Length: 394
Image (cartoon, rainbow, N blue to C red; front, top):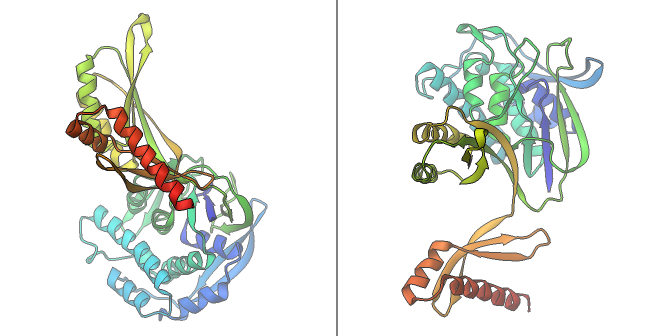
């Protein structure tokens, strides 16, 4: 499987992304052909080699005639729809701009149709986003991974006056994405860069296992004294047959609530959509027995899960962190037994063989209907799957 990894030590912007993709081998001439078809005034992409803190990188400059147009989303999507871009490239470019519009609409209290793009509606931002959409398609990776995102700190001036870093739209776009601290007092991640990563990235976390084939370096405009202002792109092959994603782990210790309260809290957390919830007996200070409550959930589920824990227990604090996990590819399946059909999950193991995990509720219903032990239903379901698999291999 071909994968890519974005190392965002100095954040990410549209021109850094495009520079890293070109530096990794995507042909600038092909990207330029797509940009030419947008109908922008004399827009030309220029690739130059620069150094940032002593490291070589590719800097993409967008050369165009001066303009003062402020575009709405439909103006930009009309450009994209009328271009020569492939269907995949058009779809990705539209999705990135739509995410930008949604973020701007949220922070300004309006609708995406009424959002008035300022900086991101300029020619250079359009070229960066559409050019990146073209380049990612040409790179042809199956999955995209990315490090945690540093935003920098300080204040910047935008069309709406001075704001703190990250800019409001950038912060909105980075919801649910792991952020990293940085000593650099500057805007490291722009709304354009945030829109790109929040649209294209499949998994956030550490560099995944891979055989590196290409490395691209994209340079930002500024040259920082603390570090090279670079976006590093790894491209290579992964032998992993499993799927990867990021989850949040929430954890708290309890020694002054009843077992009934803990059980009720766990039920509420499952009802809220948490991936898993469990308790572990622990020994706390002054030799008091306690319970460690652990919740696994997605980034979007974190606020609701924390609200439930604070409301249903006496805890004063919750520990939280992002964890990477590997998952076996799985699909829903069903086997036929002498008592009826039983639903379950079919997983693909690393060596390519299949395993079957019967669903509890399906097995329980069969056991109650026929007044037989639950374990007999499980055994029958697994045996039926094994027999079916052996027959398929003959």
